Length: 178
View (cartoon, rainbow, N blue to C red):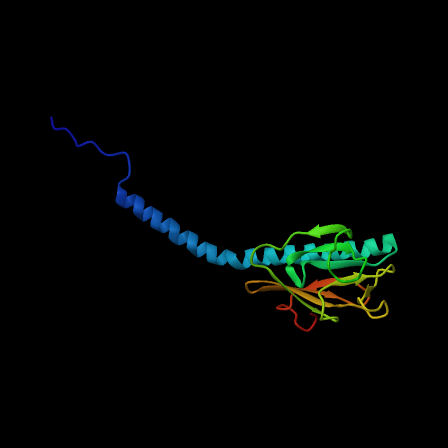
């Protein structure tokens, strides 16, 4: 009686390498497709967080009956995060002894924030006790404009009107309304 050669129950190295190559190929194809989705999520989260901070600053100004500012965490750089603060000396910088009401974390890695505000010399948003935006120089001049959040090809624009109300839009979908 002849014996059959025993069959191996495992896999050989060549089969393993082919399977790994196919897995890497599929993963790289799917990762490229997910990049815009991840960028859109990052931009939506950052713009939503900023809109919430804006609402907090406005509401605190009304509640406290005094001017409340929304300032970048690092002077002139909204991409580093933001702070809601009672800026007693009106210098748009958080100084020792000034009350910080809320701190916003920096947006996710890869999210850039650029501002186009009426008072373009300094980066800030300030609200007076009525909840209306104001410039640093005068309560009669409103500080309004836009902030644009960008990651890759994804953008969201936060528009702050002269009454202090904010709305978000996608400039790539409806440039006329944005």
